[in-house]
Image (cartoon, rainbow, N blue to C red; front, side, top):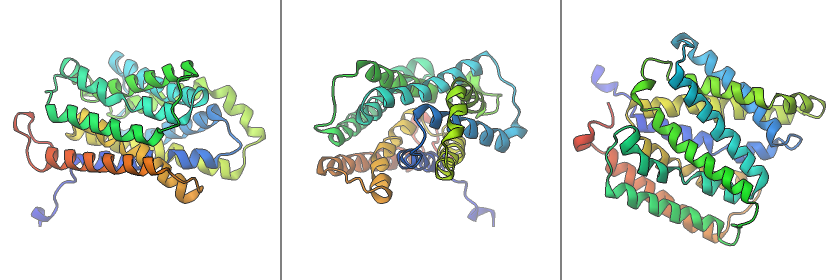
Length: 293
């Protein structure tokens, strides 16, 4: 009977996590009475509580490396909120998803991961496909928001790499998500308190889903997938599905129609991610060792 109980490939956990991430846009739009900082407060607070409850038996011990990773995690979330508030949504999400570029460049030095030419080709095709989403929408103005979005992308890439760093071994694998979210909730506490006068049940339902599932459960799965064998670069490439599906959910539940350029860009991203993932995980990967245990 044991031969029928094959373990779930780690890359599947990453894929499910990214699918949950992609629901962020529609649920943020449903929280109509809350601003970005108020959404951040409730989302981070509930995410921290969710991950703490689910993984509490794995311990809460943290070292200096873990504290640094927690700050990086909180920074990437906060900078994305700041970017969304101070520049267009298109600029914010496009610039954040430059993260694979930084992983491509830094991974050999930070975690000793080997560089492959197919990785570079995949990143180029994905970014090219995403750029089609924003034909006619990208703007140069609002430079503060653009800089924040770039910073969010840098921290996202760095955080994903740190998940595979040797110094992360021995701690609760999601400890940085717990402390990072609680830190962000603390920083946005004044905005959260101010929202109690106007929040509705629909608002609370939306931020509850964001905190529990879109951030909390998703990061548990994402980290499980990365720590279980998915390369950081591959995880970030699969992450391109998030900005692809985000407007799809908004179209289905809110009615915003994607452009023909977005449809073309989405097709390019889907084809690129599928081909890369199938090639990378169809069997053991030479010198990199087994991708799936």
